[in-house]
Length: 622
Image 1 (tube, rainbow, N blue to C red):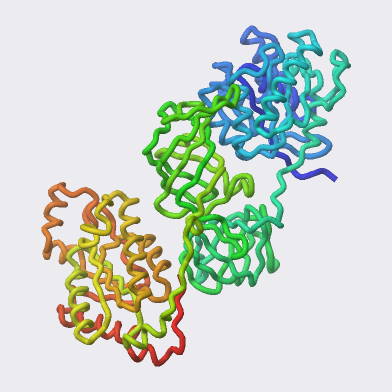
Image 2 (cartoon, one colour; image 1 turned 180 degrees about the vertical axis):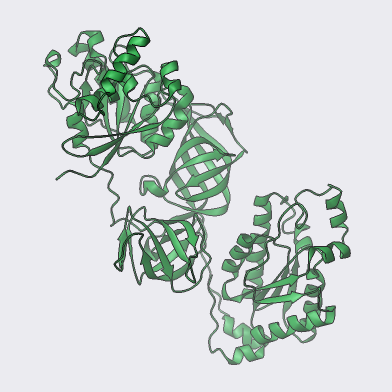
């Protein structure tokens, strides 16, 4: 029975013969369509050159014109053992970025080296990239043996050189195969000119490789790709990268800490009920309750959680001409998650030739380095040595991939010198003493809708009743707690997070916290809800833009219209109204006293004495 498909990447220095090797592989395994050899022969004749096997796999006209491979191309062929996909990764320095894309998908690799030239610097870079991308099954093809008259001595020198280098990376080649790709020696059939070589042919070694095994016995890692709402259900979709899950499992989601039980597993084109799924499967799941979960979050079991980190060390390969420098911010993409990270330190720049390292402040094109990254928000990830799928990633600058990296060290945000202390005063005791529950009343709406006015009026009314209460106003926290934040999208999100965390601490103390912030984005408010848990109450203070602009209590709309304020909510930046807030207060239709009365009624009902009588025990979810 044929084995499952194997994905291989073929890499090496420009002109060392990768394309020729691929053309020969396709021909000698009978994988070329009828007429292809004649087409290549005619192509070579027109260019006044000998028959060129490299033209077999040239996918682009530009490749034939330039004589170099400039794209990552996938080519399918079969042996008696299994089907293959060759990911042809370019060898030219200009196209290393494409190689990263190709190699990241590979089960195994062939590293092609010219017998005459040996392992040049770029060959070593490619070997390091294979190591960086987690490709552990590697065979070396020493090509163009005809140029050195199939010298066993020359083969031994090149083989030992590359073996020594790979050993320093922790890689041991499965074989080092002497070949002449142009003439077909040791590709499919054994070469009589290299009768001193007793190892496998290229095809025999390919058939000896095994597809990457992602063990279902590893810890569960289910990164969310998206959340779909086809009907009244919410389906969380993604690919299980490791481990397994079953209907009835309680899943925890990092980095939020939310948890819920799996009600069903949705598998596409699978008419029967699915009760379990494991590594490698792309599935959707439904949960027993609505939680905040989005693309990039990782589902796992409580006993084997990923590490939450704000600070991590990575080993990276830099791909672009603009250097990586300390202090610059990039996007780190791991699994489906994207995280804004700042370069805190360049620990060492590694010499690819001899793997020695020196301190540095920048990393230049094609250099390898150990770098410390810091993120404001926690990142859920693993060490690459433990779980490569959630420990390997890429750095992105704008829309460009600028580096590939392995996570080599993590500072656990949940454990680094921090021990949570349990309070001796319970939530129930605080509520009974205060005569009300602690909670977060989150007022959101356009500038000028009346949030601050309502917040201060509510605080006065509750205080006069003897309640423990305090207002966190957006402008006030910007002058103190968040004075160091700007108004970029990242800083605005961080502003919301800090206010939510502060409000949670107040609510833990039994107080009613009234947070008054525009908080225009649903995602930011959803994160605040996760932080606040069941005590979070979203109140939409609604007024149309014309009314708010007419009121313009701070003169901000006038400045925004004049172009003096960039990204002003409602004018040049969006406001996303809540879909299902706990309460909507329409200040277009209600007077100030009517609006306050409506808000007071809601707070009384949900946090007042009557709510205490209906609950014997107070709990909340973080």
